[in-house]
Image (cartoon, rainbow, N blue to C red):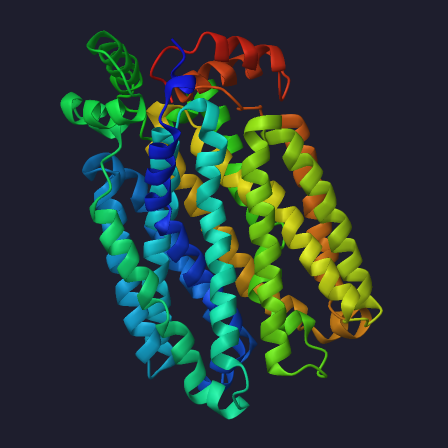
Length: 488
């Protein structure tokens, strides 16, 4: 019996949409700073280093939250951790809206990071466990779509709040209204997460078979008792073999697990080095030539978010049809071209339509490739017995490098000698080179996971190690054919 044909896709997608509200808050909390950074800079009278901290302080919390998320999710369950993330988002919204000092604002942003670290680790994990292999690319892609969609929404909200208002009002009050708008998605996340069922994989791992069965029967209508026993038995096997697997020492001594950890963590790190966070967070500063009004700059960020969301939507519909790697390769090549165009426009001080077009093209190509692909791959490339630990480590590394990039970009971009010689283009040459490395990494090290059941990922990785090839369509076909009923 093929579980992929019999699954209730509508139910799976509905669960994913609820779980991905963590992605909505993720995107909203990170995106809101784009329209407020210059006002906050003026309000608190910050220097370039402190301005970088306004943007990057959130990632300190992300690092801590993601490091704790895997262990908490294994101990308490996926749903309680998502509720804990909601609490962090609520506290952050209060603190960042009413902060009367730079220190308090920074603390509130760090608390928001805790929520992002928890939700950004556990929500993709939950969605990957819920979704059958045939629709896992689209189901997991919902997380990235919600992330970038909410960033687009916050750009629109920032624009509507700031439209027609004076610069003085934006500095004194406007940024507080932009921060306070977070209360609406926080309340929505709280109520929706309360009705979310626990992941059946977690229930099985903790000997709660009846509880798991209630969810599995909704995912696979008509499931009989024998089939249910097979599903629970197969999904229990990785947990039975997992003693000691939540330690770096154990993973490092097992070649296939070491390979999975290195590749998965590298994917997470490389996503942050592509330059997308810089284009997203610092768009008004990058595109500002001194001749544009605040309204125009805020309006332009909406289109950056829209193209990012469009790319994410395209990607989630292509990954299950053509595979992860072909789509990511095309998108990476497009991102390289867009970065070169953007750097050329800055070098020649043509920060007009060419710069805007290049930034939009880059965000769309990034979304199609590393934006969506990273979240899909890290949710499925780790074998089940190390998933909690490995995802927590990968996402924490993601935030460490996001912190480093966003913290030091204003410093690098503001070096007088580089600005005078290259007018901001130098940084984007670096990002173009990194994107070229990302393409080479995909070609050499990343296996194709389309259609592979999560319980067979370890077998796929072992075959990759043995053959020395990054992708083997024959292996994928073989693994998919032999996937047992109930694997997801």
